[in-house]
Image (cartoon, rainbow, N blue to C red; front, side):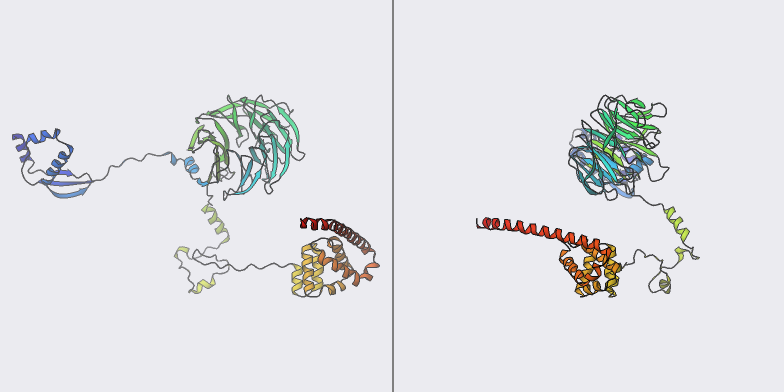
Length: 584
């Protein structure tokens, strides 16, 4: 008790700081000298939490608040995240665009090498064509079996697709029908490629362990390349040579072929060490990358096929590889992109032999593709989902300013200091025709003038015969009949025929002998033919140049009459039968 009294007397003149737990502290002085006995302090060990809170509240009431001041929160050092690297900034800038879920696993992608770089997606027994700008499907091509591989020709006009029935087909991107069907594989075809800048040949491989070099125009096999001892699952063509290509197999080997060498001999062979799932040429043409099991290896072909580096960052089998460029600049670095069954996409800097970016997806990944301009990224999952990413391509501001400076004259007054143009200013009406509208202007679109054909202009000027001759020279039957119907409505057709010269009359007879029996035009042209022969018969009979036209016209009319008689006979046979059927 004596010690407690001495402590209270000491603290009588001392300020105490008491916290409320909400970021503020209070400077307080004791209101009265009323120390608590030691027994009450010692007994806190046995009382409940509620009584402790009540005792603390009583003790706080013994003090008077004199000052209140805020307390700064603790500052923690910010760690430098991985997103600060140039690779992370680039690959994370792709904005996700959802695509419609496909029926089955996405087997392969292929981008057109020409602008606007449309791409095709191989899924189930179909190939879908997508726009790289809008990421919307524009056309769908159906095949007989599950599609395993697709590739574009160098001009982007055609693409080839291989399916599990062993069939390789060539399609036009503007049509749904196959232009060529190449049949020779006795097992599922697993890959198909067009050689670099070669529009006439194809390379394919399949589970029959054979690589085939095709002549597309003749739909024939030029050579069967034998050498693999297991399924041929992948291949790629050299980006610098039309005759060089590589193939990968489940026999753990990658073989380099040259179409100019003997068909059964390969140029070089590389042992990956595991079943090869995918191979790809690097842009230089002297190096390749192979994927097998969970490893990706880079090989130097020029250096004798030595391994440059090996990366084993995936936990499951790597399924697909592709090479992408980081930006539109020609000096932009290339990266090797891989996807695997563990759901990860890995970006490799094969120059430094390290992984520069990694991204996780919610499904096992089967295929990957990057557009040549680096603006679109697509990844296919085993569940039929396509994870598409679009990167907005921005024009350099410096380039726009330099172009403006070439064709514009600098004003003596700084643009920032000039007063804003308003419709009430005289300067507003002196802008000239080259002035562009501002963002706030309301643009009124004028009607586009219709470009009239020459015969329409002549009809507007009531030059009827010249209009008829002009449209006959165009040799478009729909336009000719339309002009004739207009002349009939104006009651000028017979007069035009009567005033025609010999050369113009020859044009008319040539048209009549060709189209007078066509069902769409026969109602008008048969009557016109009769009128021409009645009014211009004397002019036609004595001319040698009209004999052939009249002979052809007579033959067409006789043939049409025979057809009509045959139809009448058929009608006579069918009429009683129809009446009998109607009674029943």
